[in-house]
Length: 234
Image 1 (cartoon, rainbow, N blue to C red):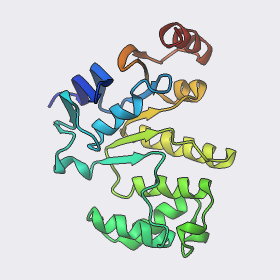
Image 2: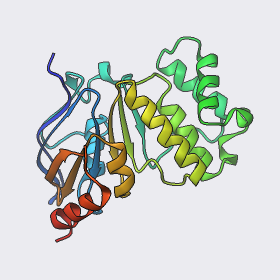
Image 3: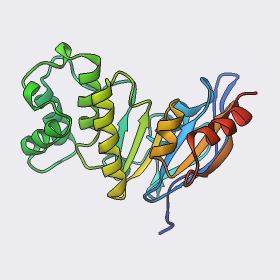
Image 4: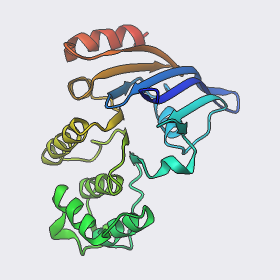
């Protein structure tokens, strides 16, 4: 099997007369951590949605794990953390995670839910309804929800939004541990120092086109900032 686990070829997306993406090629190797930067409206979230099977490209192909990104066989291998929590306000934290465990066919849903609640430090609130949670707590539970099936591919759209410092540090540690386990990660963020330090590669979108894509090994946040301003700031 081709080592490239996530692959876009000529991906374009139009909304009426607006070109959100224009002929994007992108390959993310197994175990890579790619961080995607770009100004607002560059097409970052649109690309992530196509790779997660939440939107279809107008043209081109998007493959995840050797299958079309919309293929049912890949759904259980993808974890998504975005601005939407995909949680049910009328259920408790425990009930939400058990529901998703059952939906993905996870063995022993109760034990898996308890394990994840512990990992995001919400065990003490397991019986509370999600509607009573703060934004930060909801985001932490959303992180647990995305990991119920131990996915091979993790997609993150500004995952640190709403997290306080303690929660952000905890989540950075979780991301690092997942990457060390060989998970393939794609993250959208505007936080250049955090993104560069966490990733193995960085790419930049501007106006729906990929204008930069290089490894981040040995690259400082300051150096990348200069590159970002050159590539995306004009």
